[in-house]
Image 1 (cartoon, rainbow, N blue to C red):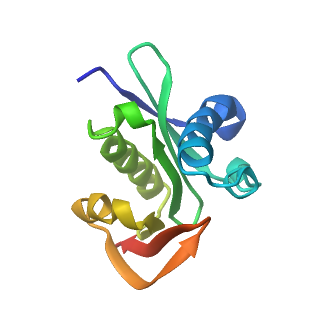
Image 2 (image 1 turned 180 degrees about the vertical axis):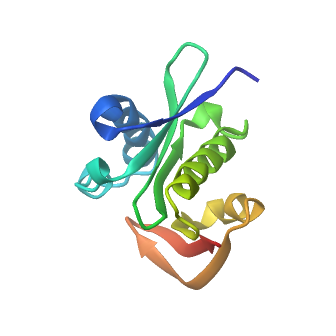
Length: 140
């Protein structure tokens, strides 16, 4: 496996890199409308950026001050190699350092198993968001 670097970054410093990953995964691959994917909440969130050994952005996630994790994305060619796990662990560690004790997210149904392996539990009913079935999950 290549050397992956996970960094907690500010939107103002790395928005181009963060947006490039989200555009490739959500807008191009999953056909999420740009108006839904790129919202006005990013400047108020903490972000993690995964980069490959050459410094190219390959993954991202964000978390707001309440512990809601979202916009978790890894470029297709880098999936299944632990990038998502490393990003999720890093953003939760960052949240814990700021006093967050409960984390929650809206998982795409296909990703529920990934989040369960990291201790998240489903709650509530499935719902549609941007034409994709999701379910809420949380970790205490």
